[in-house]
Image (tube, rainbow, N blue to C red; front, side):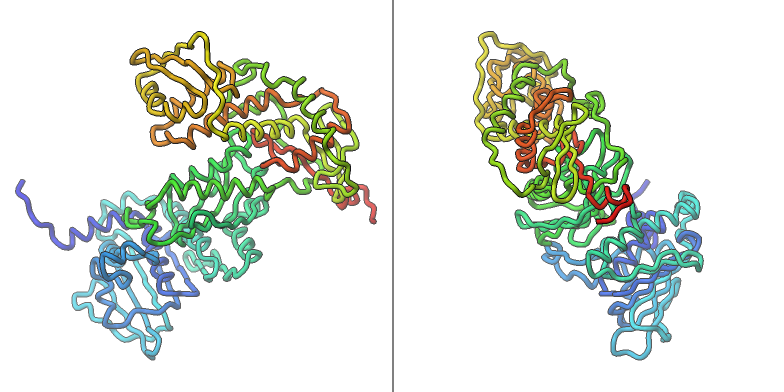
Length: 582
């Protein structure tokens, strides 16, 4: 077949396939254009789930009549002028393809009036002259696209049912409404109102708006966080760890107001939650990241859903540290939990539902229960007595051979002392692990290890970093190495387990942070082994020592596996249940 230059109409339809995948794609582009125009009110009307018609009306700056036809021209844009502008994009749209692509696959009508003009102008396609006609129109722009893919029957056959396409449009509408809480959004489907969202100028009204869009369950179990680190500003609504579940839930990222899908950002959040989530539970959040436009490249995807960061490691590190600091400061500490609330069961089997090794694979000697009790007795002798109850109050009793009951100024506090001590030991061990170089235990007889060729190469490539952590490795063949020393912190079996876990990490995750994370997983099991187990009797001094230590421990509200270490029953709740007043 000979090479030919494609017809302009065919080129437009091919390009449209990259931008307009379904009616929701066209809706997203039109709404983003309205936002870029400075609209304060955006109204959306759909017919037959967007297949029949999509209409977006806004009160933005409008389009001058002499530019209406140009707006439908491929790669015509008012948002960039030169290649340098691509390095600092501050608008949602910029590529100049959206309107041309929509016009290539549907019948389009644009009506607009700019400020200072008494009359608006309207342009429809198909129209050979592309001459706008005067029409009465309020300030702003209306874009209407009818019969999406009417000229491309092959593409239209791939559309789903009207109900499914409407759900995709509704999801797009919700996401943009979440991303821009200061804008009023209205949605109608087949002439019937679906959503009417007033602007949310403060956190209280924003939370009410999110409750409408994502459900009250999410907002009731989320907290708002905000902070800055390494030149980035992170804010948003994050699920409290104790409310996380394994059910798929919203994980929405906004970067400079743009909705994105980025694995780096999702990984950072999950790593920040790693120490405080129970089992296979997943975080839920609506996160907003503000960063210098020059530090992010948004021109990497036709639909602008993916981005690239100039300094991805710094962004990842900043998000992890900001979120971890929130949990460590007790931002999500257990507040009053109504009596009768069901908490995760404290069983060893469920505590290891995430795949961590059980007691049989962890040496029992380094931190046994006897050492743990002696550790608490030493603490008890150094804790000063104070008159004013602290956050966790003063211990008054041990009940069920598993719980400490203490009295605080706000109510009764019930502490799972095994989970509490587990977190205390874990943080102590983790601190020792991060204070490199670690002391090494030299082995009289090296331990031979047989692994895959790729796994051996990974470990040898990290030899210098491993040496800082107390490891000394020698290659003895393409599929074998010898372990000559290991960290004193771990016994030989745990040291080997950590190496095997590290060798199985994804190739793009091989870093010092990844290495430390693998070690922390092993140390978490070590802390669980050494913690006080239910059934041990504690003195009042030992119980108070544990409470005071837990108050000062980072992430002390949760054990290593994400279960709560304490709950509080407020006096108001007790009064309500006993039907009495104060």
